[in-house]
Image (cartoon, rainbow, N blue to C red; front, side, top):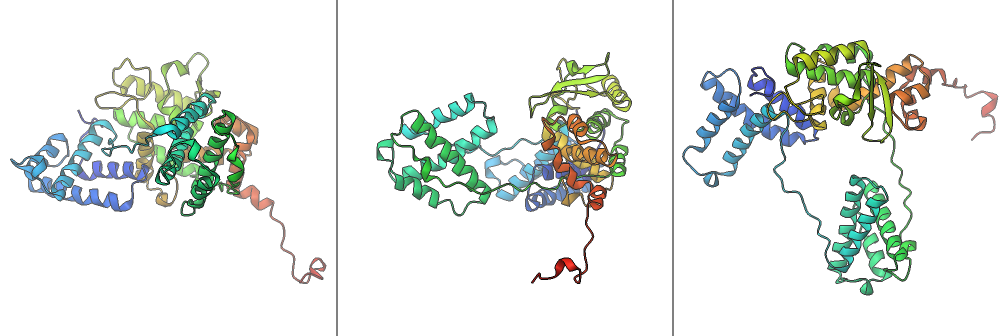
Length: 416
C-alpha cells in the first residue's frame, strides 16, 4: 500500500523526499546525488511509458541495473542507483528513510572508563536528560582517548599536566563545543574528588568559559502566509486530512512537534473542549482550547482519514505498518506544504512546525496580547522564555526608537 493513498509521479515523490532530507539537514551535495539517480529512474519510466511511481517500478529499475549478478558484484555507482530507488520506495511506504550508517560507539574501558560510567549514571540520577548525558559521554570519551594516548590508564598516573594538556588541545573546536567540554570536564573532576577517587580537587585547572550562546531571531511567517499554507493542503484524502490537522495544531495552538506526534485520545476532552497534556520538553501540564476549526479537523480525520488501529495515538502513518508518526516526518510535512504554498525564501528561514509556533507568538504580539498570556499559550514555564519574541514585534519596537539628534545639538558639545 502506498503511503499517500494516491498515485504519485516520480517528480512528486522525489520532491517530498528532497524536502524530507532538507529537514534532516542533508547537505545540498548529498541531495544532488539522489536527484541524479532519480533523474535516471524518471528516464526509465519514460522509456517504458510508466506514469506513476510505486514499489514495483523501483523493483523493475533495480532488476535492470542488477540483472543476474549478485549485489556484491556491482560497482559503486550501480549500488548507489539501487539506493536511490530504495529510498523512494521506503519513503512512499513509511514516510521516513532509515539511516544505514552504523552508529559510532564510545567504549569506556579501564579504571578511568569505569569512573566515567559511574559519573554518567550519577548525572542521570540527578535528572539530566538523555541528550545531556550522551554529550557528557562523548566529551569524556575524548578525555579518555587523550589519556590513553599518553599512557595514563589509571588515576594513580594522572597529574596536573595531563589535564592541562587535554585542555590546551581543544583549540581547534568551536567556542560552543569548548564550553561544553570544559563544563563536562569540570563536573567529572568534581565528582572524582567528592567520591574520594582523586585526593585533590583538580577543577581549579579548568578555566571558566565566557562563551554565551547568542539567541537567534525567531523565524516567523505572516498571518496570510500561514493561511496560504493551510489552504495548500488537499483535504480530500486521508493523508491530507491528517496533515491539515497536525499543521493546524502547530499554527493555531503553538504545540511543539513532540507533543503533536505524541497526542493521544486521552488528551482530547470533548466535554470541556480542551486538550490536556504534559509537555514532553518541559514536563509541565498545559490546557489548550479545542477551537472550532481544530475540533472539526480532528473529527474529520478520525472519521475519514485515520487507519483502523488500537494504538492510543491520534496521528498515524497512512501506510502499513500504521505506526505513530515521528517528529522528523512532521517537519518534512510542514516543509513540503510551505513549498507547495509558494511561500518565498523558505530556504533561508526555519521551515518546520516550530516556525509555526514562533509565528503564532508573532501574531499574538500584533494583537497586543500581554506577554504572560502568550507565555501560557505556548506552555513556557516563565515569561523570560517568551521575551525573545519581543524582538520580532517590529511595530512596537519602532515606537521605542529615539530621535537622532543633529550633530550641532548642545548634547554633543565637548564630545570628541
